[in-house]
Image 1: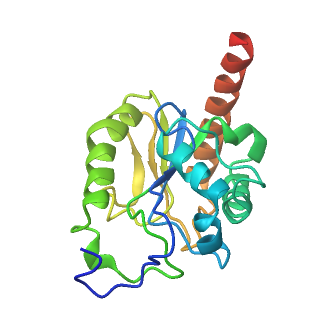
Image 2: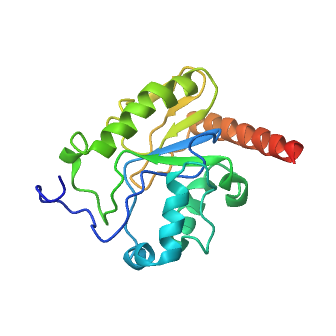
Image 3: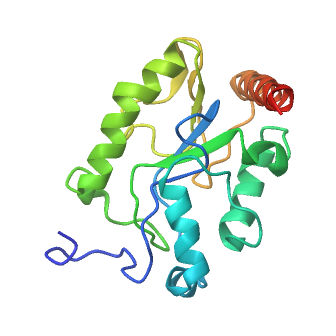
Length: 201
């Protein structure tokens, strides 16, 4: 499909729709698509970088450390910081999910989201598995980008812990009572998960 249609995705990079322990993380953050760092093509061509992407595709690896993926580490550190938790606390407890899997410097290919098989899989899994879990309080899900494309819109929480706050294009929540309640909920779930990890060792 990417060969048939003009697009602005980087074909020099490996796709990555999700990051972190998506299968089990108590907190999942929703985004539109991965950005493109100048070092990404070289990282994807490197054997160590390819191994990193293979681990992430399993959905069972921590968020990347500085050595595994410097650009992703630095960006996630900023975004996760708004929840009042450290990146080290988040590595095993927070996962990310994008509608689009392909990297681009600035997203332009909105029309392709309904056509790309990987995007359809991400949306279907989110709506059939992840969102019901959040509604029932089994996980905390926070939509930080493109809520309409996720089929969520912006407004009050849905169920127990499916959150859809107003956010900037940079994925930062607007200040207000909803942000405060989301931060409190995320912190509580992260601490509970870390305590459970500690007890299981």
